[in-house]
Image (cartoon, rainbow, N blue to C red; front, side, top):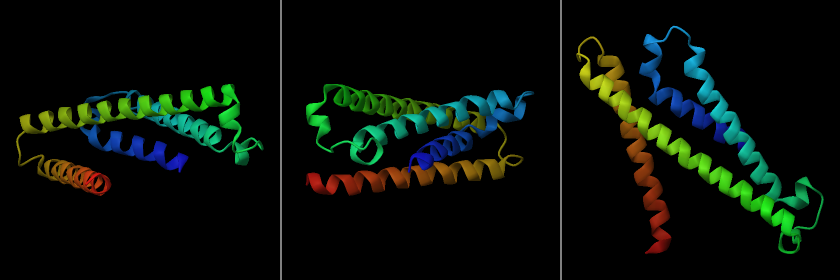
Length: 142
């Protein structure tokens, strides 16, 4: 699960920011920040997994979080860092999507129609996933 968080974050950032690589002479300046962010997200998710399940990873009582202030603080810090990284990813993702959409709108349609269609499909897919997630999570609230 930890690996999937990082891999999915990197994959979607690469997909939605794909037009930017065309004009770059050094491709690592395109890939390196996204890969570093993915590794940071994976390490934060792993840290959260370890602190949430101390009986599995640390060999201590599962009730230790209620009695050990340090473990509670570590778990809280892990949760805050993971939530902050997810929020940062969301901002980066939306910014990349908007910028790519703006760049595509400025280009002529006929020569870039395959890019335009792929981008529109990805935006439609994002909208469907968001609608499904909101619908599934809204059911318990009703």
